[in-house]
Structure formats: structure tokens, C-alpha cells
Image (tube, rainbow, N blue to C red):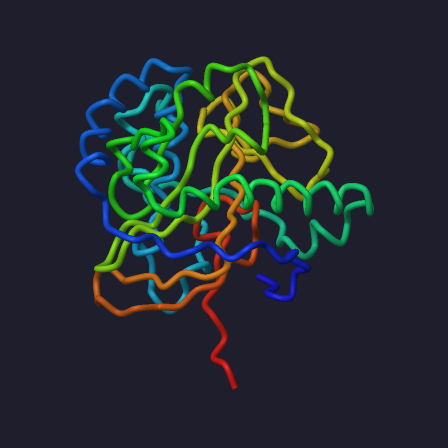
Length: 267
């Protein structure tokens, strides 16, 4: 993946102050109710993308990722089993270069707006206080939090009100805010101001290509868009305990490991 992609600068994300606290753990029980809210858990469980699952030296090399929780999620038929393959996403630099100036500006504005919205939630307890509830199946490693009220509000891709937030919650440090995700309900078209730069995807097997595309918009399924606002992450490899530094090279990439690449050593 090309790490020279013209990713616009975003405000730095302040480090979280503490680990998952009692309120976050209590929220795990509350989040059970989210199962009935528009299939949000099925989508969020798709974020079971685990950067620890693959070789630590090549965190972005494989399109395969862990969906162990998918089998327990609504709409998971066709996705059963521990692993499955997703088609590779065209590298961000290529998608960006192929877009019009207007589409590039829309993508840049989207990421900047989302970064400003989620900055106050660097502390996971602040997210819980604002109404976000952890999806239990994703509570470890790449933890997804959903806001049931945002899911119900009928808005599609409102940067000021993401349906969900994503945290990296593994290792000894505090949870790290990675970005947000948006959900489009079945039957609703998704905004295409950013063209092919911001690519939606669906975990519903009816969307056979995984990524929604002009020739297969997957409108009959729930679709999801990640907006990664973090620039850097230290990943703890599950098998070796080794810390691997990665950079986010695709602010709209999916699955998670397709959005990151190992950091180049500084001179």
C-alpha cells in the first residue's frame, strides 16, 4: 500500500487518561439491547478485524481477518467460520488520484469533520457518558461502541453524529481512539460526494463483493463506512508480545488491517 497518499492533516488525538472503567463494563450489559437496533451488532462485529491476528511484521499484508463473532451476529449466514477473505481495496493513493478535485475536497472535509467530532471521546468514559455502548463481541482489541439514538435518527453520514466509535483496547495502555463508523440502513442510498475515495462495505452475504460499488451498490443491505482519524498506533502482537508501530495509510480502509502499514523507521 502506498504510504505517500495525500492524507490531510487532522487535529492530534489526545491520549486517553485511563483504561476501560466500571462505566464501560456496565455499558457492555446495556449494549445487549443494541442487537435489535437496526442490526448494528452485525455490522460492528465486522470490526472484529484484529491487527494482532496476522504476522506482526506485515500487519496490512493480508485481507483475511478474524470474524469469529460473525457467526453469532444477525445476518451472518455465509460468513461462518473463523476466517474469510475480502477482496482487496484499491490503494487510497490511487483512489484519491482518480477522483475529481471536488471529490477530493469532500473526502478531506469528511475526515476533518469526523476528527473534530470524535476528539472529545479520546477518553472512552466520555463516549459512554455521551450514549455510546460497547458491543460485547468486540470488547477486546478493536472495540466497537454504538450509539442507539444515532442509529435510529434516520441520518446517513452525518459527521457530527457517528453511529459508532472504534477503540484499540489491547495491551497494557489505555484504550486508543481510532476513529468512527457510520451505518446506512437498507433502502437508503449513501452519499457519494467523495466518489470512490470513501468506500462503503457490507457484511451481509447478499453484498457479494463486500464493497459497495456503482455496479453493485448493495442498497438492500446495511452498509458501513469507517473513518479512521488516528495517524499512528502501537500494536501488541498476540502471539509474540512484540510491539509493532503502524501508520494509518487509508482513512476509509476496510477491513481494519487494510488501513494500516508498518511504520518506516525514522532516520
